Image (cartoon, rainbow, N blue to C red; front, side, top):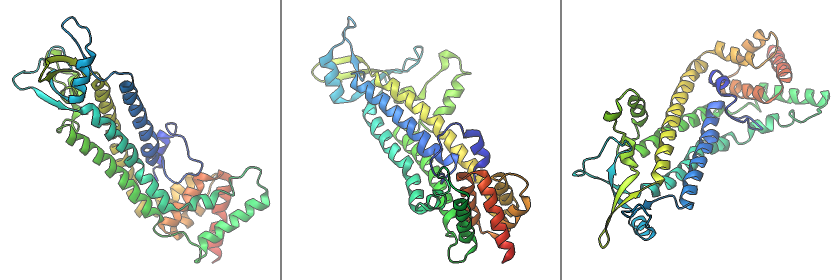
Amino acid sequence: MGNILGDLLLTVLPRDRIIIDDIIFRLYYQTTTYILVICLTLIIGARALDDVLACFEADNTRNRTIELSCYIQNTYIAMKNMSENNMMDVNTPVTVHSYHEWVVKFLFIQVITICAPRYIWKFLESGRMESLVSNIRQPNLSETDKNLWKQEKVDYFTSEQHQPPSFYVYAYIFCEFLNLANVLLQMFLMDYFLDTVFTTYGWNILSLITTPTQDRVDAMALAFPTRVLCTLHDRGSWMCHLKINYMNENTLVLLWFWYAFLAFMSNINLILHAPVLYSRRIRAQQLQDLMLGNSRSEARVIAQSFNLSEWFMLCRIGENVDSIIFQQLVVDIDRQINSL
C-alpha cells in the first residue's frame, strides 16, 4: 500500500533495514522527528546564547538587570506588529504570557507523540517480517539455503497451521489512522494555545502575498510579538525585543505547512487503500509490480486465494528481498496452490 505516493517520496527518507511500513508512515516518525529535533535545537541554542530578551535604555544600550527582571516576570504588552507600517492600538494591547517557555515543552511532547503510532505498530507487528526475511538477506547465501527459505515460506502461506494472523493488515491501517489523528491533534492543540491563530495561519501567509504592504496584518506576529513593553512595578516600563519569538514564529510557520502536508498525504494514502481492500484485481497488480517478468497469472491466482493480511504480508516480503528470489517464491506458491 502507498506505492503510488511512495515512488514520489522515496528519495526523501532513508530505508529501514527491514521494511514494515510505507513511505508515508516514515514521513511521520523519521522526517517529522528530524524537523522537530532541529527546531528544538535551534530554539534551545538561541536561549543558551542569551538570545531570548533584550531590553534597552534610552541611548539604546542593553540593561541586563532589567532583562533579568522582565525574563522572570514573563508578562509583556505587545506594542508593535511584525510589519513596520502596522502600529497596534495601544488602547487595546495584547498581553503575552511566557510563549518562549511553552514552545520548547510543546515541541518536546510532539517528538514523543509523533513516534507513538510507530511503536504501537512495531509492538503489534512483533518482529514477524524480520523473522520471515532476515535469513534470505544474508550475503553469499547458497542456492540450497535459498531454496530452503522459499520452501519454508511456501509452507507458511499455504499451511493452515502457520498462516499469517488475520489482524496484520488491519493493525497497520489502524496505526495509519493514528498518524493522521495525531497530526490533526497537534494542529488543534497549537491552535488552542495560540487563540485560534494557528489553524488558518498558512492560508493567511499566502493571502499576504497579494495584500498591499500597508494593509498587512500578521496574525502570528500578534501571538509571537518581537517588540514588547515590559512594565515593572518599581522600575517603570521598558521597551524590549523578545528575540526568541523570531525563532518561535518561524518554527510554527514551518510546522503549519509540514503538518498540513502530512495531513493531505495521509488522507490521499488512506483513500488509495479503499480500492485495494475491495479489489483483488488491484491486489494482483500490486503484487505483480514487485516481481520480474510476466507473472500476471501467478499474481492473479495468489490475489484470489489469499486473504487481505496474507496478501499484505507477501507484498511486504517482496519489498524486503531480491526481486528474482521473490519472483521464484510467488511461482512456487502458485504451484503449491494449484496442487492442493
